[in-house]
Image 1: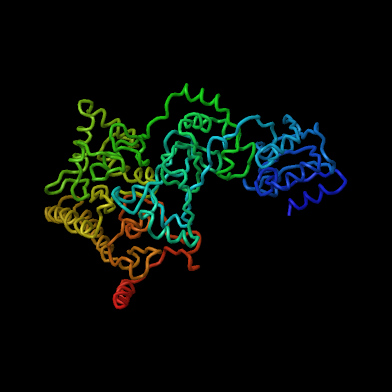
Image 2: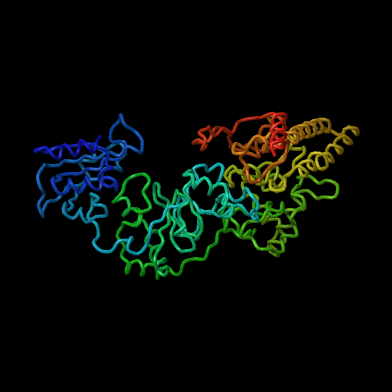
Length: 571
């Protein structure tokens, strides 16, 4: 409607002042309108007002502009006065009086990409599109089903592929947190794509070097690993691989985002827009030469799948050490001398039990081996303080802080679960979620916790202080774990993309379904040491059959068994 109004005003023999959404100045779909305006009307003024220009209209999406145009054919000397007060944030009226006004050549606007009307003069010369392609990534249209954090599944899971995602700030190697349910390119996601329920784009970038650019906001960028990447980012892929250092030097500089925003102020820009900016090859080759070669893929961040599992070099050293002790391995981790410290069953109690030392003792042994001659009580205390403990005691950090920190570091998708009975002097154990099948949960419930219960019974008979309370808490925990084993609502797991006959009966988790769904009975039972910020509300979108994506459902055990019997009869 706004663009039709602009078009009508341009046809009238008059000068018009129009406030409208600014999209028509730059979006590709208005290319024809811009050509028409530039050829038949003289643009006197364009002022970009930005969000907050009007008190009655709020939000980042609303981006108005003021345009003054005259219905007269422009001359070769026609200039457009331009002013940008979009950054004034509610003070546009005053900024219009004080901000410097620029001028741009009207005829030159036709030479801009898609004849975009820009508020600053563009550098003449080559554009990045002459050297590189902007390639968009894949979209599953159902991320909760097909996309996971990589630590949610074992690194040997054959149906999952590593995937790169957008980044919040520009850095050399990042965006490496996710995996996608790829099934070697032959599974359910590809079947849905054939029906239009997924867009599996980006293949032309695979196996080639490039720069991954987040398409929203600040256009943060990182180096592209060469594999699958999702649609929130696009790859700028150089046609000549030797040009990657120069292109990375440009895109990682503050100039790049400014250049892109000169031609497109929309919150999310397209993959093609990312390469429609000026590119001075000689200049940026020089910058790249001064910087040195592109760094090899490496990260000290355990939330990146290129992290190698090193304890001493890690960003969260104690978190990594506990994970190694519980038998977790990162995708790029190579076998080393610390593998021998890994627990056999993925259950380590915080207190000593028959035949097994407590977690703190075992962790000290691992850290001592990792740090060698550098290891000392002072270093231990410093590591614990750096990890968030006030008193520097490893035992207290494991009991009170570890799990809350683990949940935070690993984005509310913890792969180590701290199960306890609610007492600081009671039972606590950390388990490796990847190994927590039915047999392991039974061992935790009846063997490991059972040994603690036997100890408390013995101490209660000996009238030890607090033994009765510890016994009651431990038996209550055992009861709750038994409820999870049985799996009756509300202590059940429900997976919305599986048929009723495929729903688990009791605790029989499928790790492919993700932490979000499998952790539900443990959250419901209240047996985790700290809160996990996870929900089972309806997911966005609808299924191909039009049904809603509900997660908070609790079919009874009998309903599940009946569905299995019916499915078996059908076969």
